[in-house]
Amino acid sequence: MSERLTMEELAALMKTAGITVDPTELASRPDSQFDDYGLDSLGLLGIVGELENRRGRALPSNADRCKSPGEFLDLVNSSLMTGA
Amino acid sequence: MNSRSGRTRGAGTPGRTVVTGMGIVAPNGIGAEAFWKATESGDSVLARVTRQGCEHLPLRVAGEVRDFDPGTLVEERFLVQTDRFSHYALAAADMALEDARLGRADYEDDPYSVGVVTAAGSGGGEFGQRELQRLWGQGPRYVGPYQSIAWFYAASTGQVSIRRGFKGPCGVVCGDEAGGLDAFAHAARAIRQGSRAMLAGATEAPLAPYSVVCQLGYEGLSTAEDPERAYRPFTDKACGFVPAEGGAMFVVEDEAAAGRRGATVRAVLAGHAATFTGPGRWEESAEGLAHAIRGALREADCAPEEIDVVFADAFGSPEADAAEARAISEALGSHGSKVPVTAPKTGTGRAYCAAATLDVAAAVLALEHGVVPPTPNVFEVCHDLDVVTGDARACGPRTALVLSRGQMGSNSALVIRKGSDSPA
Image (cartoon, rainbow over all chains, first blue to last red; front, side, top):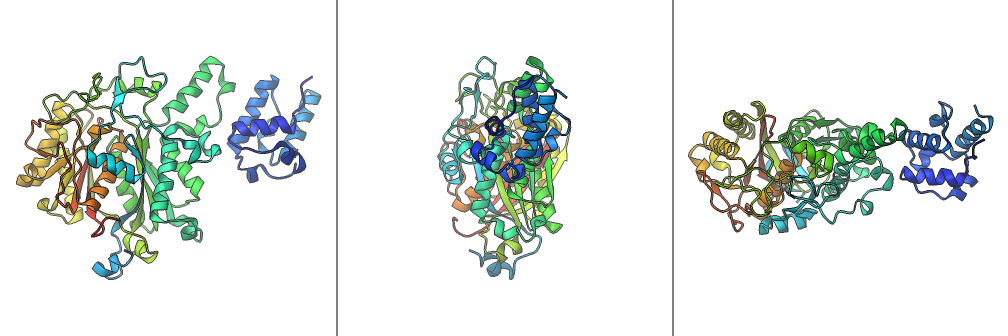
């Protein structure tokens, strides 16, 4: 059983990609696009890698193709909860 | 100033390539003003290497860029993706664009009309080392995705173009140290082929442990202890060169296009040529460099006697210096022993590809100010050259010849003409 990904943790992970964003803003606009925050595909790939290291397990291969924080949280958490 | 082209050549001469902006990040100053003040004064900023992880290495003296705070100049998301050499390029490109007053409004209707070309010879060594340490220290899952771009030679060109939205011809010259001059020729070619403007130049950041270790094998690297004695080309004390970091970026435009948008022409890139004579073959570089000089003069339609100042490559080994002196003599004839020769890089170090771009910056400023800057730390010259030592010389130069050679055998020459009749 792994810890769920929260908007707070996602915001902290985005910070490592050089993107400063308020977690409450992420939570209030879950369908805003990563692009709009300036996070590119390599940035999201880095976040996926860091999350996999933190949780000690692989995430779905399409995780780095998510377009929005909401989509990413849904995908990651359903994977973590089902243990897929 | 925008009427200059109109004054001299009607609506400007299509095909003449001009410099309209410069951005400089040098060991002796950030920005053209600080750089020129230190360069004209002949200040030497060579000093003991202080960069973390380098202190115990046999390289003692270098030209480090200090007081550069990338966080105040470039957005965090670009900084985390890039090495220090790209940080310098991004900051220098900003300064050059601002100097040229070339903004998004000038090209947003046609982003394909502006491109970027840089030269690189060291790459992102500091970034690459950090990621490689993670690879063998923690495993491949701990290597960040930006390793896939940050340490490559092309990183600076790519990031400058992405950040500014330039979609025109982009490239990187991996042509040895002389590539710093060849980048200008590539930019000029892109302009002839229809680009409106090009960002051109080079920056390097070779002062990191991995990069320094790579350089220790260079025969020409000076490992002398005393900053005042470590880099003294053209003297009988010559013991190699001192490495440096930093560099410069330039806005290069077609003269007529620059005139149409009211830009100030800082200098004209009049002629360039390059040759290759093989790694470490300094003896042969004499003829190769002479051939490059003749080619550059021909393209510039410039007689040898018109050259008012030579910015020398000044490699700093007896053999290489002798070859350069011979090349100047062969290509310029009797004028070769009379023309003022300078090598301001003896005060800042030799920043590989970026050394030539800093020389181009110094040449543009020298033409604008009518002053030839001196060659710090060099006093007794043992070649038949008029090397400017001690104080700057106010001899009103109008045409400069910039020379560059690489350890791998490239030889390049660039002729630059004064762009205006008074300092900008």
